Length: 341
Ligand code: HEM
View 1: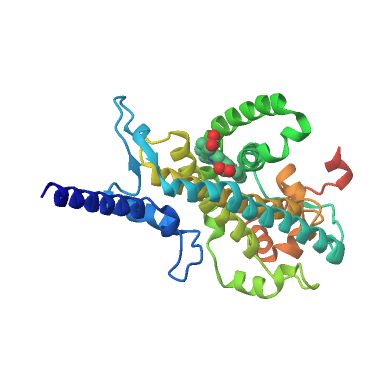
View 2: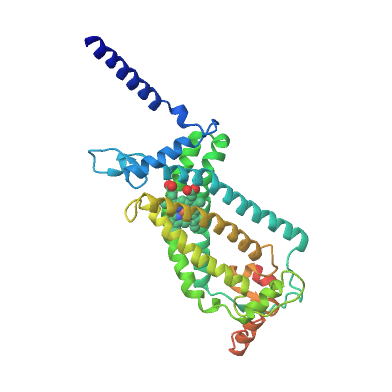
């Protein structure tokens, strides 16, 4: 009897050992039914584990400090976000910004500057008053610094340390971060002022459709009529208003982390902020091109606030008619030399 019992114990022990070995063989779980290796088998198991735990997509422990977020051990969505931040966003940025620069250089080489065909008349008309120019330049200056300091977060640590060294990069990145935070406030106020002061001239109308069909006079030699702002300028206006609002709202979520949202909201805010920002930079490069070397006679509009009457005739004929009818187009004649002085 004792011998039988001993044999039974041996059999049960062997069975238990076999079961244990079978369960502890991760390699088996890594294989497909045909025996080939399944490299994602582990992540599938991770997802099953997360579902089974029902912990909202994370594996958490327990902590005694007030910040319960510190209890998260594994949060797979964080890996997706990191991939976006380290890889996807950089590609979107490079394609948008470098792509835009390439297009503009090609456009300049092929089309050249849009010249003032009828030449300068010497008579000028006021286009933007002092307050409009002040708001434009404050917002634009903030934008440039926000763009450089923001792109430093996306590309800086990849490009700069090999060039300037880690210590110098750390110092620069710290000042860049301060300027990004503080200049966000005047930038937000600037975008809001732009929205209010130019909305009246930026409601789309039929003339814009014709203007766009004619390629805005940029392609070909025609000069399609336009009111104070043409179809292209209206697009820029709405990109600034909508893009500016998106970067501002998402930016404040990032600046005050976890005050108004959880980790998923933070990741979303960063994705919106980074993506809109790099596209915004690409569009603003095109805007700056047209306002400077792209079009003869355009820059003065935002510099001293006036444009030549012939420039207004060629690019904003409907606006010039309105201004003439209301008596605003009769500013005293002024030579370009006098303006330059
Ligand atoms: C109200 C306006 C804005 C606010 C409040 C704001 C705030 C922020 C904050 C808090 C960050 C995260 C910084 C960090 O991780 O330490 C950030 C990142 C960034 N910002 Fe802004 N920002 C604003 C406007 C802009 C503008 C106008 C641009 C560009 C034109 C811009 C471009 C960027 C970029 C590229 C990043 C880095 C994205 C990344 O790689 O993660 N921001 N911003």
